[in-house]
Length: 353
Image (cartoon, rainbow, N blue to C red; front, top):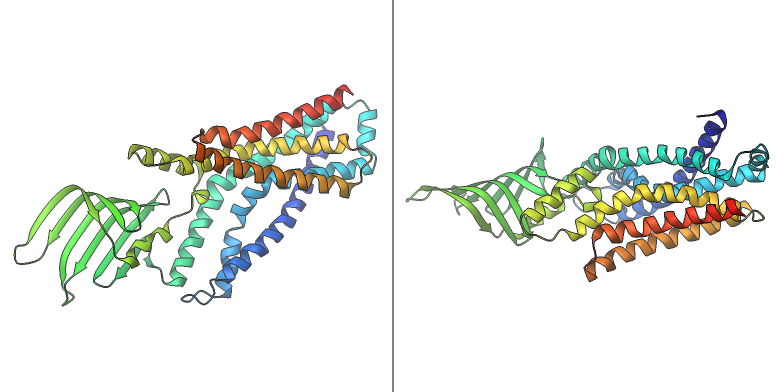
């Protein structure tokens, strides 16, 4: 990497960082307003809302990083163009293709950050936020990693939520009117079909009536009372799952012949985020060289309109594609590669011109 490469990389990364701070401030404020609506439920207070917002920042950054790359790269390259630095680089023999390589090198750093956020940082903080929110709202009690829920004479303990969504190692205690233990059920895991219907697997049932008995069942349908059925609030949203966790959860759903299209779409959208980051970095280069007489403000506005339009169309196209039965990989990656192709085509035409 040459000195010029490092100079361009630092400029692009600083521009992207500044754009990310501005975007996080805007979206963080909107997230805070949304969380403030829950203030007063249980012990959930203003400080809890603030913590929820802060814990959600890595997830929000991962979602906004391609857009921040576009805006930050336009700002950084536009500033270099306004100070005639790009003109000097071109005059010194630096080709547009060489500039594109420097831009892609900066994009690789951002992609590495995106992978770390998606796989390691954001899922853990999302789960911490979920635990804190449910404890404050009294949805459940937690001791260590165990979750305890009760509705009337039914008590449920959940050891953990595998893949962030599947209750495992469950203990169900049903009490009689005298609050004595009438039935004890232990299950290896539960498939939550709906809030009103669970399918317990690898089950041991013990009854403590006069004709006490112990039974071992492969599966057992269970209809939880309303309070316990709301355990779905302990499940992480699909967007909050790490890509590898999401992959395993999709395999788990498919093994049970359950719909997995929505989760597959989220997984491929995370993959598309990598392609989008590269595409947006190259598109910024096209904006700067394609509109040489435009001011920085005009370039940023054009970039913002382009980025917002692209992400809205990609989201709408993804949901529409699922409705008509298209492949989640196609509807998620298709727009990303189209945008990448447009950026490369624009640079090729500019280089030929």
